[in-house]
Image (cartoon, rainbow, N blue to C red; front, side, top):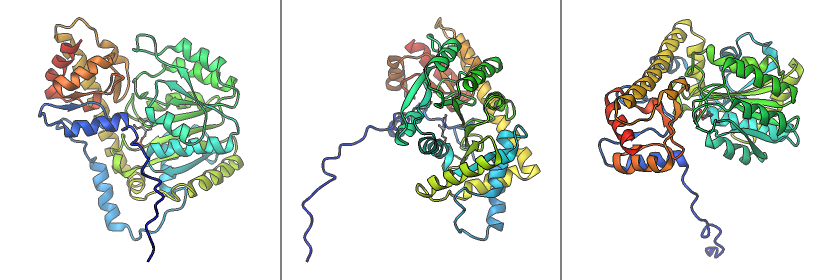
Length: 402
Ligand code: PMP
């Protein structure tokens, strides 16, 4: 009879701290107050507080159910129809499609991770520069890929707009040629602060002049100014750099959060280089998750490759975008109507789901403890988590902690 080993490796393991944002959601779920409100996690909610399944997604799923004939593995780089659709949606006819290697990934997080692995594997010595602040997971992903992580200044001192001079100064002086620089292609998370068209073209110039490798994280295409409009930053960068990594997510714009649908696109200077890069990305993926999940990508491919479903998707996406804009406006005028003397109109210049509200840690704590309103410590608010009929409650609560 074998005896139980006395060597215990796991007994000394201490618990990891909860993820700052997902941990808040756990606390939110455990909160039994009925008036509670979760403005922390980045998920779109409709007027009924539900994260809806889009009509076009349901229709595509119906078709898939009827026609799918196998659950065999996908290839390492994913569904060909999906990859072609991503290439067309993100890049249009901007560059020769043979120069773009698209690999389907598990969500935008998977895309960022594969991009990070690729830089660590193929760009010897490259550091990666992240805007400060950025999506918290960027730091963790880059570090997990073994990259050395640095940051460039992004936000102005009043935390309401872009410190453009600081961005340019840092990009011009801090990274070494060959380093990678991560940019949010639109709807900067967590601030909602995006560069203007003119600022993008200046940033693109510096990136090219300093021979930096742009990594464009494009998790919110269609949530800023529109599907095409949101490619403006990417277009500016790619008009000056012939190499880039672009990370796509369909979590938000298709509402496919739990299906894990994303893609990483490697833009290379020639067809041959793109094909070599693709083979290296596939090698990295093979030893990570081997090949991606089918269902979400099949939905996206079905919708994007069918004229009717695609136009319905665009209508639904535009409705989400406009509703977020409307909620922003309602919040700003709601705050205006309270007796607090703070002007929140700067939120109107910010793009996408998120905004830096300017609320400090103490105010955020008070909102949670006193009112059951959950906001991340930085003061980042998910505007898409607000609701029309509870706007008065929210504005009164915010005014009471100012
Ligand atoms: N990048 C950014 C900037 C994000 O905000 C997010 C989602 N919060 C992601 C990537 C990851 O997206 P996904 O949920 O598809 O993994």
